[in-house]
Length: 376
Image (tube, rainbow, N blue to C red):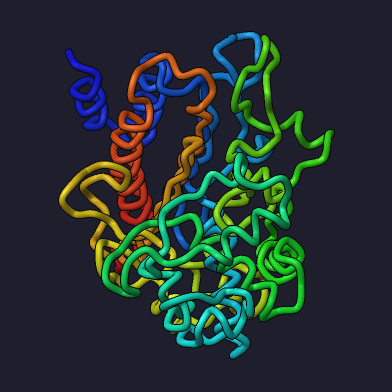
């Protein structure tokens, strides 16, 4: 029985048993040593559980949904950068159609005057996908100069190319529009209102002991420092990567998109019109910042989520998917970059994400039926 076929068979049992079997089979297959899964709706967290161990040693602790800190990698783009932009758009402090150069005066060069904030969110800016800042720049200031002065590679709006540079620029635009440092703005205006007390950049030495390991160097386990080398060169704070969070903190964030109260304990953090604008399907299965569910594959978001589902993944092995039509979210956090014991671990993880997403949909549907709600 192949790895994928075994997982697909497992996914026909019961939602909780499905998730248990799927994730444990992923561990046995060497895709990741441990994981956290959280499933919920706009009303409640339905399921939160840790699996496996922090490393491949059974003597290390099992990850915890409320305590283990994961390096979110590119999930930073949608858990930090995108909501920061949304808050500023809501307040009228940031205009999506203003040129980037009106916020960052050193963003100049041939054709760059036509690049807008919207282009950065759509990944249609004409900028390349990546720059090796860790080798090209000696410090954060030099790294920033390289990104801001980077020239566009093709006509603005002519193609969609997912680019870390776009997200870096958005982080600096947030600083320009708000007058606050990026991390400070997020803590004050996004994370604190949502009760995301464990979500932050740059962990303290004490907090690092709670982080899922990302590497081994000369027999020493590396944990609590950012995996992305460009984020590290930017002193650990960037719009594209660098954020750490827990499963239950991310559940608080996911509920923002499903709970009419905004999950803030008071008024909504974001207007529903802004949420709809940013999570509307556009070219190449993208919203603004978010990925939209690719209905041609079961990878990442499975087969049962609706075409309205949106989410994102991170290179370290993290993912978040939200379906406003089915009122469900699913979070899968792993440290698959820690000494994977299988080839193509990211490809296999995408398959596992899809199977877990399908189990999450079945769990939400079952919960709705048991509640007796007429909406089911």
